[in-house]
Each structure stands twice: as structure tokens, then as C-alpha cells.
Image (cartoon, rainbow, N blue to C red; front, side):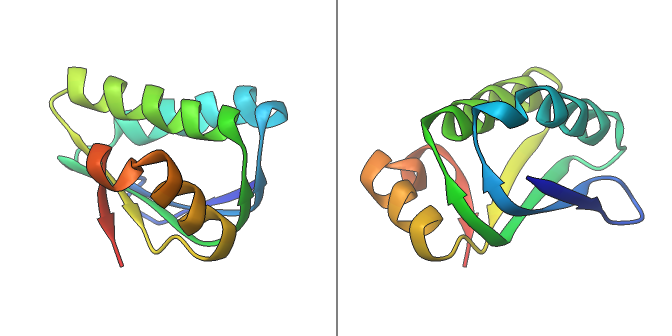
Length: 99
């Protein structure tokens, strides 16, 4: 997984593959997102090609942490396999997903 923050640190773009091996890096990403002043945190997924069950779990943890901090985590523009995984796992019912 590669990631790129936008200037305000409340928006990050993930690209490549998001798997168990990314758990340490994603924890750092989530911590940085939670330090931003914005009430809404956006994870841009249009460039993410693959996500496994561990990646899904990390997004759930990030959502819960955002909720504890009084923030909302939004997933933006999932494509291909990622979008199919979200449909199969009902992530569209657990998250706000921007098309």
C-alpha cells in the first residue's frame, strides 16, 4: 500500500494493495488523520487495486477510532475488486461511501 496525504491531513489517498502487511503503516496513517482538525476524514480509494479481509478490518478500526474522536470516516471512490469486496461485506451499510 502506498499513501499520499492532502495538505490538510484530513484526506489520504491509498493506492496499490491493502493487506495485513500494511497494518503498521496504516496505523500511522490513521493516527495522522485523527490529528487533523476536520470533522470529516476521507480515505480516497480510487487507486486501490486490492483489499483483503485484514484491510477491511483496519478500515473498521479506523472508523471506530474516528467515532470515538467525534469524527466521521468517509470512504471515497472504491473501484474494481475493492468495490466488489465492499458490496459482499456490506461496507456500504457500515460506512459513508462517496461514488
